[in-house]
Image (cartoon, rainbow, N blue to C red; front, side, top):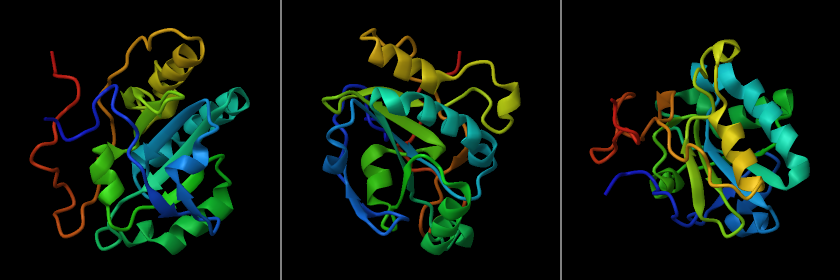
Length: 196
């Protein structure tokens, strides 16, 4: 069994602190027509390179009932700039259109099978997984991207069509696991889409 959540799987529950002072649970987003959960952080160049594209996608689809939830699971022991106070500061500065949650224990990252930052999961109204993988094909230099897989998945889901490409490999830095080398991946993690 692959490390990451399989297509069709239900969204794992969570209860995590948000940068706005709330504790957020999966059920808090029950009214969302589509839920986009993504694993992100404060420092990764792939996150920083694509944050504004993600912002535009979130703002485009928010009026249509799509809610975005960002989760930072990175170990602050590996990257101190990923600690919760730094998350609070970043949200105050950037005012991203999503809630930003801290997964200190990394249990939520393990439940979802987060591989990289960023790594996106799109769930339908029943909270079944319909898309997982990258946001765009060049997140580090988003100005050079040629496809926005996240946007395509959201558009397909909202139109009632099958998602045209439901599975892609996330592109970015690997999640920084507590007590592990910065480049460590779980032994049962693998690329989602085999290389041709």
